[in-house]
Length: 273
Image (tube, rainbow, N blue to C red):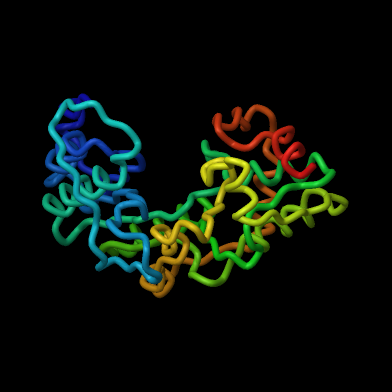
């Protein structure tokens, strides 16, 4: 936060990977306006105001929140706060900002363990509960793919706002879990359980990574965003099996405990029984 320690320097680019407090990002962007040639801000696909329709693109309306410096923040405000941060960056770097609306970032270092939940569960073997329908579309991006694209964009001095997630209708929940089975434990048995049964047993969507029940049409477009602009600019995606393999092969020192709230193996077994 002590930006004045950098006042005598100059940089090709500032890469802000985690800002979500608007006045902090505002201070950073204003400080670097004449000290950096480009400002890269990693935002989120959660900035959008309405996830009920398919094909959300970079021109879709973003969420709006009221924010006062110093107020208590929580993650329910993340989308609106990130939108305010984007505005601050674009104000100070009007033609030199690269704003990245990232999808579900997975792979090495994912603190939410969205893919790791499935690799670990499948690796344990036995009967694996899979939620909803296997043909339900999902979107994600390996953090290494995003990093490589960001570097190329910086080298080429390209800017703008981009949705960065796998193209819609290219990955499904079935692809994710079946690839985990092939990579981690081919002997595991996958049992698909309907949205209705899971709901009747009080299972929340947040308990199973990438699961969005069809009973929640307000989120129908969450994993169906338009990423054609980023793909046209050179964003590419490694094979899903490669992401799963790198996630499954994390050394103990690189792996931190998963967050609370995921459905436990014991709870899943009870439900299947």
